Length: 123
Figure: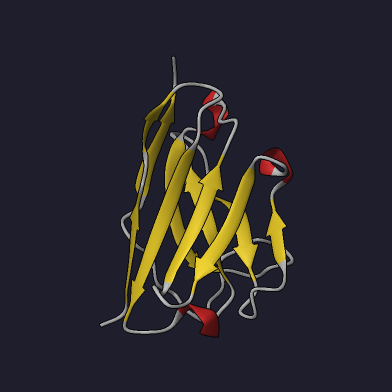
């Protein structure tokens, strides 16, 4: 059974850090470009970051460049998102899924989503 399980979210103060994890089962992450998406209350889902299947290429939405870092552990079949210098506008539910690295749009090659993990940035 194909599955993605996101974790690591929580409440953090502005300027703080969190590391999100996305554990995959039923398939190997490095067969696809995989990335992170987020949806804030009342807003549409947006692509945050994407990593190519080779792991050699990454892309980020402008609002997180220099603050977020995507990575992958092939042995653990897990995707990560290190988030530093968090801002209130980063508050959202974060999801991982397959992505197009150029556009940060979701990829139909693997139409699979987890339940997401909530990140709240507030003092």
